[in-house]
Length: 392
Image (cartoon, rainbow, N blue to C red; front, side, top):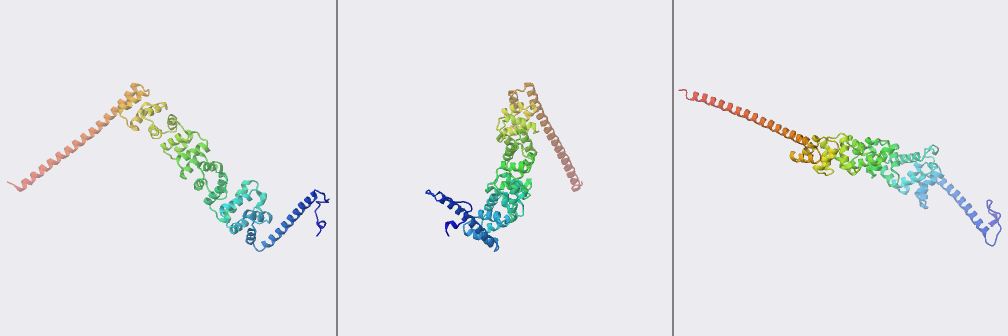
């Protein structure tokens, strides 16, 4: 065939110049025509082979070097096959992991029209969020992927944790009190889990703290979520942690290690949310490691009365009345008040001693009386025996 016999599709007319520029145009046009013709032939051939079954076409595409993603894209976009049917065949023929299937679905899901005739019209896909939900409903239905598996798969595929949370909520119907455990097992950081609870499930801070506690997170982790995700102040966090059942020492650790509150501030917070003075004293001793004199000063500044502070020195720091009195005077309590408190404590000890002594005396009298009565009874009995043996 001569060159002039080709239908150049309006690319010419051409004149042959010395620089061969027109030959370049001819070559480019011929390449386009050949590529188009080859594409048509290729599509026609696939259409014929599809009658033999989808798996057969996927095998042949694999055999000529077409990769899994391109195979899926071609059959869905160009031939209108349902994505669920195609992805199942591609997974089987290419022996793909679920992680790889997830990557393919993610790439296909970037444009709505690529969903093809999967049973969902792309015209109904108003947002990429709906696209994602549809694609992962397909993954769930086609491969029986569990909620725990999908969380790990999506994490490996690089999905944002919010997207994973939406899939768990909207595709799998996972409740808020279950999602924390699933995400924890998948390896997400506690702040990520907190964001899912807050942004995807709309869970309030106190509810989130309870859910995270049930999922086995340490109190410091829960405190970080209340601080970093919910933006709560330290006193609000402390109140919630108390509400969901953490100990006062747990709360003290969060205030110290998460919120970086000083020991004088923590005393005020714990007093504000209703803890007894001895509880506050234990936090100062156990968590902050303060000495007895420092604890007395902190409690005084927090507004505790002298009797309360004296009680902490006695019950928590186990000081003698004399030592407690010295500390109370050193931190600025009036001497008369200190003497009265120490005197009242001494009187209380004395009263207790008298009570104990009286009880011991009464017991002794009771025992003595009982012994005397028993002796008299024995004497009378022996006398009666003697009369019976020796009647003369």
